[in-house]
Image 1 (cartoon, rainbow, N blue to C red):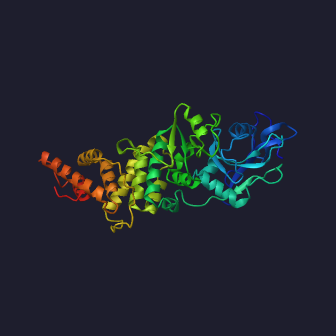
Image 2: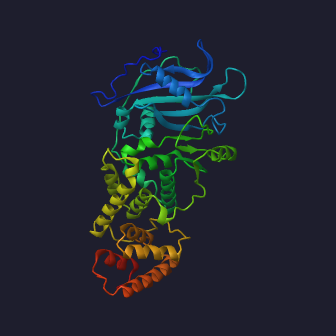
Image 3: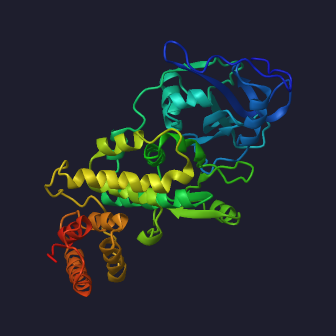
Length: 414
């Protein structure tokens, strides 16, 4: 087992990136054991690049006895959080062997991967790529005996900043609309707990649709009991009602139910969530991936609304120029929200009439699927409302691009 340096001393870590293109990633195991140092939950093994401060922080974030929501040795909790100012930790938590103390139950066994900020950037700031690289190197399940020493791993990053294949995974209207709603809540909540039947792959798609520089802002845990000591931003609580109640009592904690996702109203939806919806609507994952991947690394979280608006306009311009197939899709590419009211659509028509590109794109997304009787009736109503707006403003130039496009969407000629 590597010896931790004395408090106050720094540790000389291997270079985060080597000539071979690999990235140095440190390891640590946090679990319950009786050691020469102490009894209970502690770091039982670590690699040479783990500093005293790293060890202290890992113990703060580490889940202890009875932290797993589901008592199933096959269940895995994935977690991601910052470790100080210049490092990040990606970890997998499982139930291990029986508790040494005889108090019943199993050890909660957490395998931590600690990576520098520069090394994490080589993985495009995506924690799921770090986990995938680790799984490609070794078996991460608890063994019969606890390890006593761990090497520094050399991981090989791969892939573009944004994977088009992950965007294609949201191949149904329900998945798409759930992700749009989830994105809105994630962007507008200081702390968001999510419940229901979710999968880690859904989180992977969410991270994939974020600009690279924004991804570190979204720490998360899955399938761990809630603890205010672990300051995650996104908190997956499965279907445990008591854990949901405990977390809901915390100030500033919002809730998202995957089994019954709340609709995010268009008028108040976060612009990045609207951009995600537009990206799905256009069914061009390679183009969407390119646009997100081209967002500057200097982009900040507070910049996302304006960036989302720009990307939506860029994608719309591509469609208007005729660079996308015009054949109607075999199934709706955006879920038609059955509770979309006539009043809300009329407001969108009025905003689009005044030149609001966001409203124009939302209307376009609403009817870019195959005709639906209810929605076609609403389209006719919106068309009549549009013609009334034109009549009420006789001096309006109907040749303006926004007016022309609105007429095409509503299938009326002003």
